[in-house]
Amino acid sequence: MIEVGTEPAPPDWPKAGDEIRAQNFGPFAREALARYAAVSGDDNPLHLDPNAARAARLAGPPVQGMLMLSCFEPLIMRWRRDLFIARLSGKFLRPVLAGEGIRVSGRVMRRRDVPRPELTLRLIARAQNNDLAILGEAAVLYKIPGPLS
Amino acid sequence: MKAAPNHAQSHDAMAPGPSEDAQVRLPPIRVRTGANEVAGFLRETGGARTGGFVPVTFPARWLALPAIRGLILQLIGGRGFLPVHEAQTFAYEHELRIEADYVLAVEARRTAKPPRLTLKMAVSTGQGEICAHLETVLRIVPLNLEPAS
Image (cartoon, rainbow over all chains, first blue to last red; front, side, top):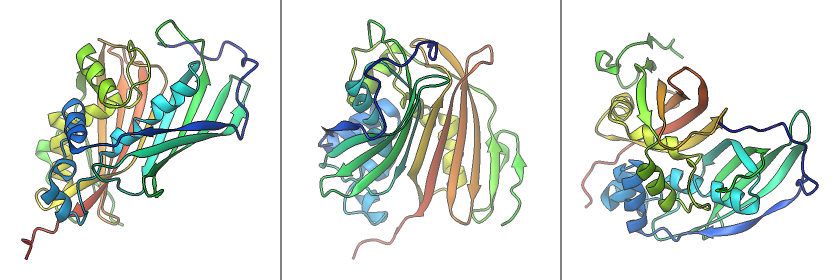
């Protein structure tokens, strides 16, 4: 269990409009998709079998959406270590095909200080061709980072 | 839209036709945040920190549990259809801990128009304390099974 909300916001608590520096993830080779399938159990043939991808009218196997959505957590935690991600959501808008990478970025949309320090983040993952792949949002709360954070 | 029958029972006993709306609730499922599984998931998703925590998106792994996978396959209509991830939400009351046991409550709702399958999962401790809610929206895509010419 984590305790949040008992501390006031620190002096450098972000404000609306602050940017989260973009980071690149991938490229996600087919081997990376297979490894993610192994650790996540998401072995939907769509992501692993070019024939299944073609049958779904895709040019190649798409990267698992959850693999890309998972990149938002390291993006956020490299930005600040003193956060608890209370909510993370994403809409998968465009497929990113195996062999491609994504560029992930974010922006503070809203800041609240009471009853507890909280930020609402807009998160974006773009494909190599700059197509919007995932439109995401997170609610993060202030927490004092622990030794392993 | 047709009223969705509420099948609060094992999915084995439920076999709606592919054009029907349907709602199914599974019996509670016990899950565990095993350290090896968490480490593997973190490794393949660009984990930022040194470990010792459960990634926000880790519970998506439980979508691959046999009972849930079977439910998904049954509700999308079986062979000839693929589930494509359209949206995902994780909402946390408390962080999950490594090497801890939890209970999953799973409810699935399929709509024919539009063809979607929505899974809602609640993760709670054995004492009934809710830790997280997940919502998964899958688009049901018919496969083009004609052989390539």
